[in-house]
Image 1 (spheres, rainbow, N blue to C red):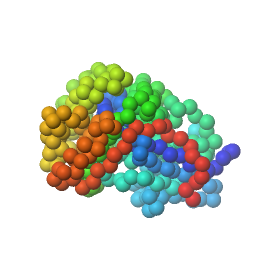
Image 2: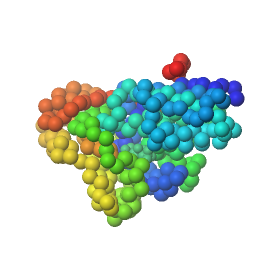
Image 3: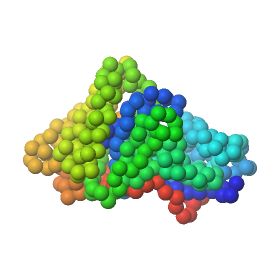
Image 4: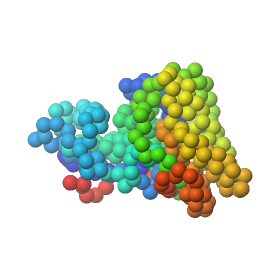
Length: 330
Ligand code: DP6
């Protein structure tokens, strides 16, 4: 083993066309392709050190020891790296820090597993391509595949493990969009994404959404490349609502929206009537992501602040790829 310790950083991302449901849960092969923007102002930094003296993997997230479920998920992911590098049986110390709060509707699993994958592979001396790193990050958390390449990225369904990776469709500098995250709840969600993906097939709407997804993604990608926010916005709102319709009609049903979520949706429609070009999307939680151009972000933020029930607002522009960084967290 040439190198034992490495540090990487990665950005979370917001999906314009969402990933919901797997065709293979074990490999995290998605039921549909997805498209997203990396969030450059937010990041996770992770150091991984393989150490033959350690008895088991030690995982610290935001200066707290990870709970057993999180530790097991990280260990399972490290096993994929260890198997590839011939390091079975060598435990690792993992220290990870986020510059954004968790539980506010920003998928820390995306940046977390992208940074973990990049750091663990470098520490293990594996020299993988971006595609290989993206496919490997996907095994830890599906959306993490999209945080590996930079800017605006597309996760291909692929035919199997090696061909289901994300690639950049445009660099971060292509379009100065903003994600204005309107936080209406900080409560830990009762049903996380991983369980939710498994429930998607129980909704009779799932097949319809999956059938429509590729064409929606192609149209969304065309609008993105043409910097046509009105065309893209209509598609991202439609896809988010279709995904939530699948969630709400799963058995048992998953209701992530609260009255405050609906109030933001309605406000966005009235702001557009006032001439503010802004569109919403919503992940597996009640918080709402408002997508607009940089020039409109201050106005959108001020309007969102004035809504009842808004606890916090985070703003991010587009971001680059996951990358190795100098210096370690311990
Ligand atoms: C609603 O990638 O968090 O945010 O693979 O189980 O970790 P796991 O799921 P995750 O699912 C993301 C779901 C989503 C939509 C999206 O980001 O595409």
